[in-house]
Length: 170
Image 1 (cartoon, rainbow, N blue to C red):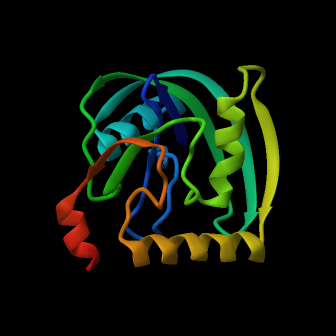
Image 2: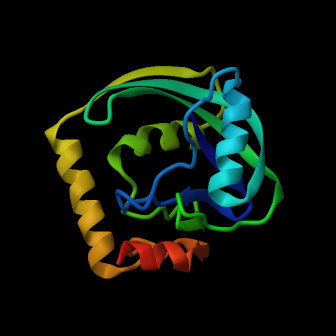
Image 3: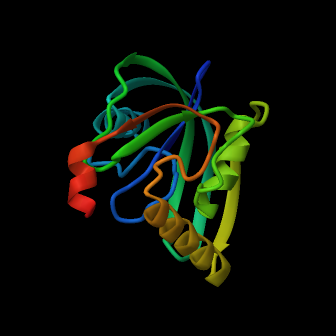
């Protein structure tokens, strides 16, 4: 499950501790949990925000690198306060017209679909081969090298960073 969270501040992206690059918040469904309940829980755990799930953007079947099926939902903030977590140490709102260059390739399609006009959910099959792996590695290295949670992006409107997670990365 992944969330594209939009507000007047922009679209919310986060980074992970393991692989540094911007991505969509979200995670796995636990046994007995609905997709929507899992998404609300994961977003709260990672970002501190409560969200309202608005619609299914699409289902993305990925093969190759990081193979899995991802359901992506459009959401809006419904409460809570933005706070980074150990799992997502950097969180930022980005202007939709100026997204950071450090978005992993496998999140670009779902993000683009969510930002386009609402319509029927899409179903896409994507293969993440060597090109996506190399692009992801370049993003990870560049963000670690710079130490810049915004990934060199000037479109960040509000950034939150977990300093304890930053210390753990060193």
